[in-house]
Amino acid sequence: MRLHVGCAMWTHAAWDLGSKDRLRTYASWCTAVEGNTTFYATPSRSSVENWAAQTPPDFRFVVKLPKTITHERRLRSADAELTAFLSALEPLGPRAHAFWIQLPASFGPGDLGALATFMHKLPREHRYAVEVRHRDFFTDERAAASLEQVLGRSGAEWVPFDTMTLFGQPAGSLVEREAWMNKPRVPRRTRVLTDQPIVRYIGRDSPEETAAGWQGWADLSAEWLREGRSPTIFVHTPDNVLALELARRFYADVRARVPELAPLPEPVPTAPPTLF
Image 1: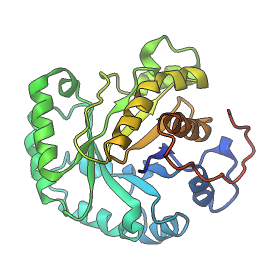
Image 2: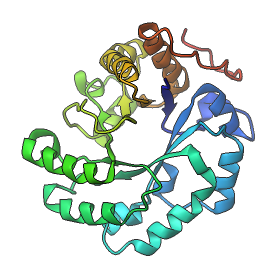
Image 3: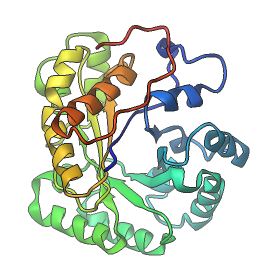
């Protein structure tokens, strides 16, 4: 029975994780991380070797494919780029929990053929997760079913990005307004396709509002654990200053529902005070 929790990054100026080996310190707080930096460039193999050296084997990286593949090539004619990317990430070994295919909002039901072809070519030794942002996938049952069919053939998961709490009331700060401009506004999706669900959740500036908004996910995570699934939940806020503490708070909320879930290890102390 494993629940993994994490944030959108492993370094943040406000977290004060030290001058070096910040990932090692982060991994004492959280058990997973979103690999967002790989969206902008494929990392060097030596960098990935360093990531692996700083994390335990059961740490989970959910690593985003480069934008050259997903946004510029739109999954077409990108074999060389994909091969280079997968080769660079090899040192992560089992830590590469899933390769994350985040698609642009313009990638709609009419593009599913490209996704199906791309997924069919992917090496079967890896796990994959797809995030879509085109609204039709959330409001049109036929479009959703077609996407699920494509993902099902590859055993891939559909990654929801839950922004309902963020958009639940008007933005109250500059960072919330910026998040309003940049985050997708789509209906909440809770249906999972595999035994390894991945959820991205963004709250608000207020820790209490953020925690109140995730209670449904805590209920679902407890249910998934009882079903034998192993979810990974990423907690975001508009500025992510308190995301480390909030990810652990989410874990504690699930553990209150599933007492047999093992506690998280004690983290390496950092300068900012904890929330609980």
